[in-house]
Image (cartoon, rainbow, N blue to C red; front, top):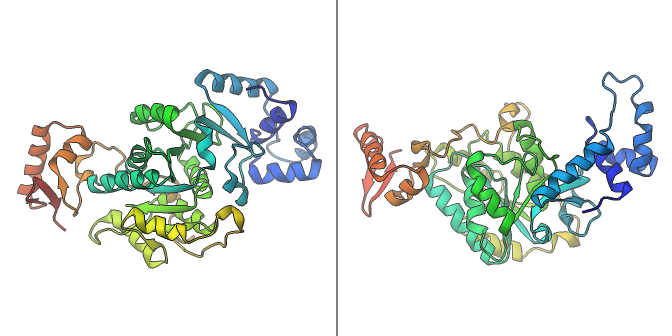
Length: 373
C-alpha cells in the first residue's frame, strides 16, 4: 500500500494528541485539507497549555511498515471498503486499520456482545446464535473479549456471513493474550478492525470508543449476559442513539448476568430467544443506508451511576478459567464444563462435588448440573 501526500497528512492530523474525529473534521472544514490544517497547528497552539503537535511523516511511514509486515492496511473514510454505516455517526473515524478480509466491512452486520465472565450455557447459546446468523448471510461483529465476544466470533467464523472483531488497541496488539489463536483465525477467515495506531495497548479507556464502532457498523446490537453496570451497555446505548435496533436475550432473575439484558427489555429492547426473532424483525425494516435512522431513547444507565465502571468491559471475573463463573441456574453438561474450563474431568468432578456438598449445586439427569438459586 502506497500512501498519497494527502493521506499521510490526514494520518498525521488524526494521530495528533488531543485531535479526535470531531476536531479533525472541524479543522478540515475550516482549512480545506489536512496539509493546511497541519500548517495551522502552531498558530492554534498559542495560549494552550499543551500544544497541538503532529507526529512526523517518518512516524506515519513507520506505522505503514508495521502494517505491511503483518498484512494489514489503512482504510480511509473515502475508500470503497470503509464501513458505509459509520458515515451516519457523529464522530466518524477518519481512518481505520484492517487485517483480514475488508469485503466484510460493508456486509450487513449484527453485533453480539456481553460479559467476559459468561456462563457455559451463555457461551453455548451465543455460539449457536452467531452460527445461525452467519449461515443466514449476516456478518457477526463483536470485540474479541473473553466470554460472549469470543463465543460470537467462534460461531460465525466459518459461516457465509463471516465475523469482524473490533479491537480496543492497535491492530498488532493481541488482547486478551489467550485469544491469540482466535486472532490469527480472524486474520485468515474474518476481519480485525481498529481506529488505534499500531502498538497501542488495549487500555480500559479505549473500550467505549471501540464499542461505538461496533454499534455504528451494525444494523442491530444483541446483548447476551451482562451486569447492570457492564461496559456492554455502552454498546447498546450507542446503538439506540444511532438509531440501530437494540435487542437482548433474557436470563434467570437470580443470575447477576441477567440483570443487564432484563433491564434492557424493560426499557424497550426487543426480546430475543432465537436467530429467527432477530432475522424476522430485521427483514421487515428498510435498508439502513436508504434512510436516516431515528435515534431510540433507551436509557440504559444514568449520569448519576458510576460511569467509571462502564469504562471496563465487565466487573465480573475476567479469567475464563474461573470455574464457578461458567456455572449458572441454567443446566449445563459436564462435557461443556470440561471443554470451556480447560480442566481435567477429574478436576471438574472434584469442584462440582465441593459445590454440591456446600449446597450450592444440583445434579440433573443427562450428566448436567446447575447452581441453586
